[in-house]
Amino acid sequence: MSITADQVRGDVATYLQLDPEKLTEYALLTEDLGVDSLTAIEMSIELEGRYSIDISDEELAQVATYGDLEKLVLSKTGGQA
Amino acid sequence: MIESRDGRRVVITGLGVIAPCGTGLDAFWAGLGQVAEPETERTIADFDPKEYGLKHTEARRMDRFAQLAFATAKMAIADSFGEDGITGYDEWKCGVVLGTGIGGAHAWESNAQVLLSDKGEKGVSPLVVPMVMPNAGAAAASMRLGLRGPVETIATACASGTHSIANGAKLVASGRCDVVLAGGSESCQTGVMRGGFNNMKATSSSGVSRPFDIERDGFCSAEAAGVLVLEEYEAAKARGAKIYAEVLGSGSTADAHHITAPDPQGDGAYNCMRLALEDAGIEPAQIAQVNAHGTSTPLNDAAESAAVARMFGTDPGPAMTSIKGVTGHALGAAGAIEAVAVALSYVHKQIPPTMSTQNVDPQIVSDIVLQWRDWEPTYAISNSFAFGGHNGSVVFGPA
Image (cartoon, rainbow over all chains, first blue to last red; front, side):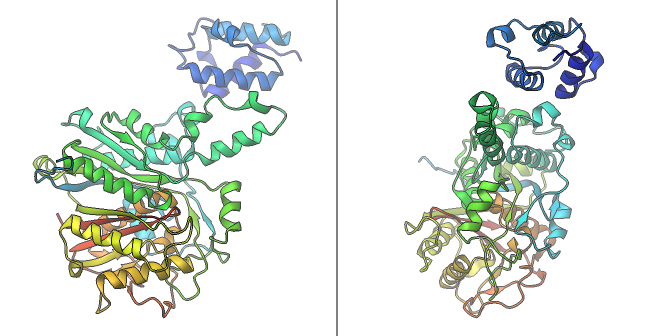
């Protein structure tokens, strides 16, 4: 399945109940978006289910910004930024 | 020594309640006189965690019983101290004792469904453990309201709320705490719980809770939460706090008889009340109001009434009411919302009626309150009896 960056942004924004405009490339998940470790894990499970992908713990640990997350998801779904 | 009171008295300075018959003190009190719709399960229609400042992402990691516990605790603190929360106290001497019978029943059930689906273990939420744990309600109140003294949970099924108030009062009386949020919360209207209660024939098939009535046929399960702010009397008086009533003493015993049925002799209940009166330094004849456990099951109501008659006599004996005719049975929150009702009876100078009860069982020899009844607030006792044989009683008096 091929998805777009806008879809990822919309889904993550819905999940976090945030304005999609806050999901900028350099927005830090923890400091700027209030995503703590538990929420990050929970969100990754949600995204795995939604896009039929696997995100390993190691990959998730490398994600610091929203941009990192978007790139990771798009790389796994063959989507376009 | 360990329970040395040094003359410390414990008073109720704040109340919070969320129940099917009403959210907040005024709605709850008015609701105690409204006939409930016949429903075997009574849930809170209009609860929105956002109204209590919980963001979507925060609410999602708390099961409903914990959301209710936090919201009610916040309400109680606001009632006692105002919207800015507790001030003027050492945070290390502010505690929480919140009971629950079951804990995070909804999270258990939804994650069990995930486990048994194609997703299997991998699909189980990483948040399930802190959601199902029974102490999540107490923890939520502590974390979000900044109470850093003893924060504990008592799980004695339907006596949890009463035991929590009793133990919270002991923390204040002993000097370990200056303020304690005490009460209970419950939300477990799930398929597993429903099936269990129904199949053991504990719940009412008519959907009507009618305590002490000749036609009573079981309880109606409910979700609810009730929280009392317990505070040391002199300090409360010094800060000009409003004082609803005093918590004078408590009793706790066990039937050691059967996992679900009460001891038909009512020995455990009788001795629980006896010990509570002794703890309070009150004579049986001084008790004017009994807020009964009164679940509307054939066995509980008969055994409780026999124990009350033995304790207090029947000539005329104290007025006895069960608010479960309206509220249903909120299990681990039952004793807590009933304590809120008792505290409010000191303000309104009325005892709420046992709703939906029309024909008192001739076996019941107590003076059952069937209409709102005026009383000049003196001494009251609130009982809770639980699966497992746990009994709890708390004695209240005017401050």
